Image 1 (cartoon, rainbow, N blue to C red):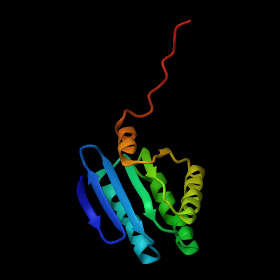
Image 2 (cartoon, rainbow, N blue to C red; image 1 turned 90 degrees about the vertical axis):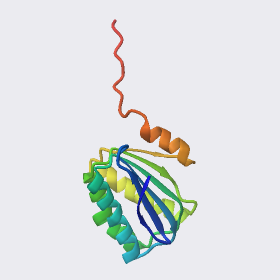
Image 3 (cartoon, rainbow, N blue to C red; image 1 turned 60 degrees about the vertical axis):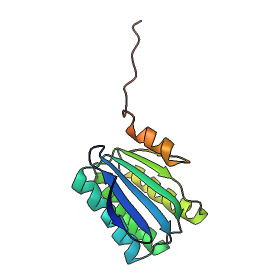
Image 4 (cartoon, rainbow, N blue to C red; image 1 turned 135 degrees about the vertical axis):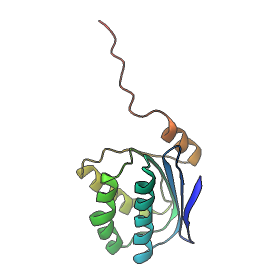
Length: 143
């Protein structure tokens, strides 16, 4: 994975060949810092036409009401329009973050989000799922 951006709150990396991006969140981001981090995620997704995303939210703190509103108005619609097709998430250990991210996910479903999403306990299983072939059509047995 190539490092794209790193500060004390987030580490963004990508693998161009696998079309895979990864965000690792640490602590509580708010206001301009959170918005900049989300916009950097979108920039990386668009720049490298990423189709797979691993969001490690385990250490991500709560999201304020103002940041949640901005996320619903800007971040979620941009994700819905992006090249991403699979998103694996390692949920936060913080209940308030889980609630806010749940609201964002529900908003995504209202935007015809063509994105497969799953939650995982560890990165290894998340990466296995992200890298397996996507949306295999069921085999029809002759009658």
